[in-house]
Amino acid sequence: MMERGEAKNPSRNSPVYAFGSFRFDPARAVLYHGATTIPLPDRLSQLLILLIHANGDVIDKETIASSIWPDAALSDGNLSQHMYMLRQQLDERAKDRAYVVTVRGRGYRFVAPVTVVGPTAAGAAAPSEDFGDSLLSSGAEAFAHYCRGCYLLEKRTATSLTAATEQFQAALQIDPEYVPALIGFARAHALQAEYWYAPGSYMFPKAKAAIVRALEIDPGCAEARATLANLVLFTEWNWAEAEREIESAVRLNAKSVCVYANAAWFYLCKGAGSKSLRAIQNALAIEPSSPALQLFLARTFVHTGEYRRAIDVFSSLIESGPDFSIARRYRAQAFILSKQPARAISDLLLLPQDRAEDLALRLPLLGRAYADCGENERAENIYRTLQEMSRTEFVCEFNLATVAVGLGRLETALCHLEAAFAKREPALLMLRSLPWFSPIEQRARFKALLGAIWPKPEAPGPPMAFYSRAATGYTAGLVSPLASTLRTPRM
Image (cartoon, rainbow, N blue to C red; front, top):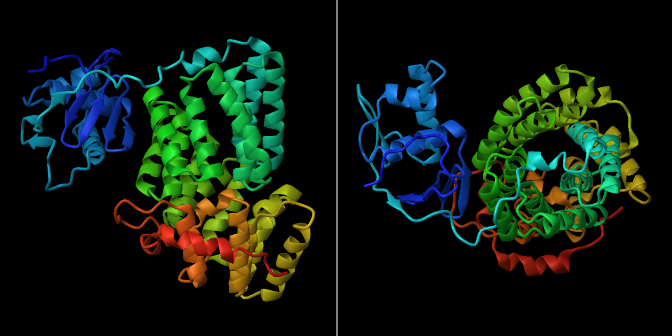
């Protein structure tokens, strides 16, 4: 029998509990389900500990309130909501209570047999000092540059990301081993590629060099591990390695905003929309004022086909002030995908003209919106302009393909996508969840692209968005024909 114990503040030497197909590490507030790592918010973790420590006895509301909400009134609705969220994490359904049972009029009981499987797995990387403690380790001036760099990262524009890089560089000139600045430097470079401002072939190696150096200095830094997972995903499309790094980051610090955000990117690209949404919601619970996280939440809604919810969040960001105009371009994207191209055009024409922003997304979206409105001449003019610009400046092939499909140039669109594959454009990881290419989704060359990028699904699941249905049938056997079909887009 396990001894009863307090639900709060488990020690680092606390045991790991196994029940059903789950393992629970209370010290790190992490639930493991097969290869999936699920960070639990504080109160859900405390609630699960309390239930487990009851050894099958019923826990009433008063005990839960005094243990987990000692300084606040606990309503029946609040308790029911937390129980519902815990059951969601345990994959329980209304008629299948394998773990938590409601005892009417009395409380709740944990009914699954529980075994202690030992302390946290040996051999895992040891957590480093708290990330917050390292922020001031290199002095006030380096910290000031770091803070300014993080502020600029939030804006997500080409200009702000370049300026952020300069701030992190200034901090590294003061201390070349300042790990927070190395992580910031890596993120600034990676974001320039991920937001299509610059080629990944130039930005990602710089980002990876910085993050490798950060891990040489501090191998137990969860934020560095999470950033490395992002880079492995976008540069190598190595899903297994990226997931291992995410899980390592979670073990090191399951409550880090950076870890949550990078986990959300991984799951979004993989097609696990519900896991991505859960991760970004957890990040927002810690840092609700972050415009970048709110933008990510809205983009998650776009990728899961919830366009109305996405538009609402984008609109809220736009109304908050002109300092976050990037939300307008992504709202335009949601308008196009929800069959409202005229509203997208209105948004895009309101954006300030900036060459980097124009090339990254404004002009491609405008071209696609005009095409969807039947204004083909305007769409053709934009498409030709982008092609001309691509001879001397970076233009994402994925975006050219988006306009080409709108114009009915289906073969040309396939060529653009294959060129994007040859360049390993990070935008291709959006190929399966953004339904830009419905006219060509059944073509063998398109299927070959999906088969080359995504791992074969372990088992069929609910569709994430438009392309999930078709993607479950793609196999590695389609990769070989792809290599022979890569060609230069017709001009």
